[in-house]
Every structure is written in structure tokens, then in C-alpha cells.
Image (cartoon, rainbow, N blue to C red; front, side, top):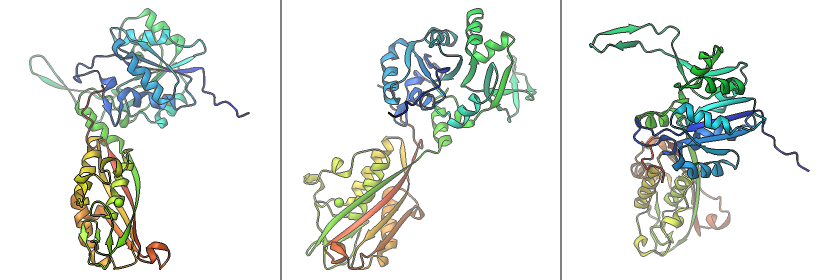
Length: 389
Ligand code: MG
């Protein structure tokens, strides 16, 4: 019998996302970014870590069902509880939901979707009753007085504090039982006289507070997606041979419903694949009269628009065409220019290679033309504006 995969039952994570998001303009935890709500991204490192036993999501009452679905999609582990009127009240609700086996608890903001396993590991590996990630302040700090006067603030010893913050469970429960509300839990336990241990945080672990932070998040995460596409078309007399939008003089052309541009079709499937979308047959069904003899570059532009709606943009394309005759080389420069313009990319980001099949198989006998494509997409370049439904 296979050994059961065990999570450490002594460590739990509370993900707190019960705020109204007044500075953000809507409840942040369920703002959809790169296809999932921020709280999904915030909870993911904990759900995936074998070092974490219980995961507790603390959300507004109206978001309980959405939060259950978030946990379902992440892997069915964890519980959802309704939050309180303040952040500290929400943490207290989360503490009440902890399993008896829990000795250490991490408290994390639902609006921090960029936590890495590396930072989580660094926090868990640090001994102490309260372990807190932080960043140094490099900008000069000024205080502006109500009368308009300003003076510089000494930034030595000033730290920007992040989450997740790791606490001894009993200590955190005592702090919440004895003290009132605080901006974060480290402040509460230090009021109890506990010593806080600081570890280096990460800029990528930023907290989404303002709408502009969503854009900063995209620039910080450098998420790259790669997709692959393949296509083949039969070669017949009395058809045009169009490759990457360029008509190439040839005895036989590609058979198909549209202009049968095999290279552009492979590239469209690569782009759709990187975005996790269905293939081109789904969006442009063969037999649909709207696409009869269609210019495939127009369809490519439509595919680019589809992935941009997902908050993605094409970064690079690489195509290999397999054709016995005629030679593709003389047309390569024009083909790159056509594709680059349809993709909105510099020509240097579009590669086109061609080879023959050495006389082998249907491509080698001149009965068919094939193409393979890879596409790289960058996420976060444009944010997903749609609020969670
Ligand atoms: Mg095709």
C-alpha cells in the first residue's frame, strides 16, 4: 500500500481576507487576478506545502461560498470561517477554528498573492515565538505636519513589515484574549513583551492596497507561459500556398477552409495553448462561412485579443515549417514582418525556420505541408479588470 502523504498537523495557516477594501474600491480578497481571486493566490503556497497542516480562510459572510470554492479548486483541504468587524476580530475567529494538534500558526493577508515557497520556508525554518518577514526602507522618510511644515524622519531601524507572521499558538491566543485591536499580530505579541524575530521578506510579496498595486504585482511576478501548436495541410493543384501571411509561388497550394496558412494556424494554437484556452477549431470552426478563405493573420489578431482579455500578452513566437518545395528562405523576412505586425511584436521576437522532410513520408513526397510553433506569453502585463462574480 502506498504511504499516505502527510502534512505537518502542528502548523496551521490563517488567511485573513474579511476587509471591505475601502482604499481599493472593492473587497480585495475576491478580486480576480490572472484567472483566480487574490485569496486563491494567497492560500496556494500553504495548501501546497507539506509543512502546513490546517489552512483556514477568514472571509466576509457574503464570501463564504466563494471561499469554499477557492479551497475546492486548490485541493480540498482547509476550512472557511466568517470574519469579524476588525482585522483582529477576524484573526480571533480563525484561531477558534484551529485543530487541537496545532502548535504554531501563520497569519497571512489574503491581499498578498506573491508569497514564494522560498520565503515561507525561511519563516518556518526560523526559531522564535514570533517570526516576521520585513524589508528595509531605502527611500528618505518625511513627516508632514498639519501646519504644512515637514521634517525628515530617521529611517535607521525602521522596517516594512510583511506577512505571513509565524507565532506560537498559545502566545497569539493570549495576546488576542488580553489586548485590543492592532494593525498586525506582531504588534500585539510585542505589546505582551514577546521578542519578535525578523527575517528578510521579499518585494514580490507585496500587499495589494490600491488599484495600482495590481499592475506592480504583474511587473514583480514575471510569470511566463509557454504553448505549443501543430498543424498539417494537404497540398493540391489550383490552391494558393500562404505561409505566415505571405503568398509563395508554387505548383501546389494548401487545401483548407480558410487560406490554409499552416504556419499561422500552428502559432494560433500555441498562443491559445499557453493561455489554457481551447484550440482554433473552437473559436473558428471549419465550415463556418464567416471564415471561408479567411486571411489567417486576421484570425491571429483575434487570438491575440482573446489572450489579452485574460490579462496576458504574447512575448515571443518560434515557428518551424516542413515543406519539400519550393524553398521558404527567400520569403522568410516578409513572413516575419507580417507575423510581427499581427502580433504587435518587434521582428526580433518572431523566429521562422524551414526544413524539408528529406523526401520521407507525405511531406517528403510533396502531398502535405506541416508546421510546429512555440509561443511565450507574459502574464500580468495587463490586469484583469473584472471583479469576481
Ligand atoms: Mg489548419
